[in-house]
Length: 241
Ligand code: ATP
Image (tube, rainbow, N blue to C red; front, side, top):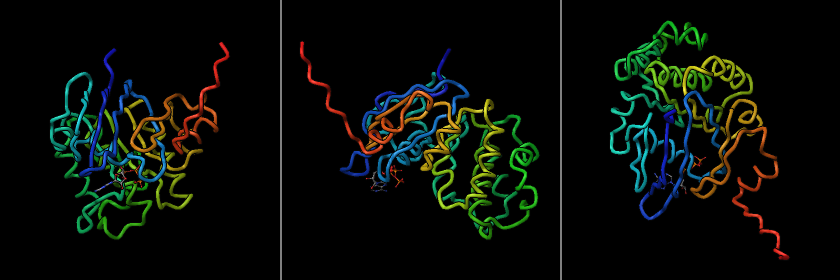
């Protein structure tokens, strides 16, 4: 079966700095991937490269087998890649409904509409006519997720899902995200390792721009994850052969 998303030797730069270094990854449809890694590991740059907001210096991105590497962000949204970015980046002067409407108009046709998105994220219904700029962090994150969802993506990227939110807001968001399982291929950047491991079907860890670890959470030990997080490469046992 064709991968939902294929990254081949993907590298990205900020000037002289190589922020993402030769990342290769194959993601099956409806997989739930959590991306962890220390500050500056390259997670956000990778999310922005997949969604077309940051150019790839090298490598290739395929969406359901079709190359999208050279497509601009708006064309990737139309093709089915949607990002909920770090910092949410809503139009603060517009209402929640207007923010969602713009995303719907720029996305794909599909089952996600204002009504179905409000079903998946019930807290939105009461917020639709409020300016996005006046919402709490948790409410803004819900709107940012809804905005990605209403574009009917096949691959949805959520950067820093729970950053800066109260425990109650994080709990509510994850309950909503649970309803998306099986409907969309999800990639989420999550600093909370326990939360990431409980939610994802697959975990990757980035360190210094490289993919250090990749596997289903149940197969990974805390030690492996900690080593990957800090980019520690265990010395190989000396060979006595
Ligand atoms: P964080 O959790 O802090 O957001 P991250 O894993 O998402 O970290 P990136 O934000 O992708 O990492 O940053 C990767 C590297 O690129 C870091 O060294 C960072 O300082 C650098 N970087 C990120 N954005 C820029 C930029 N706009 N200009 C220059 N360097 C940047």
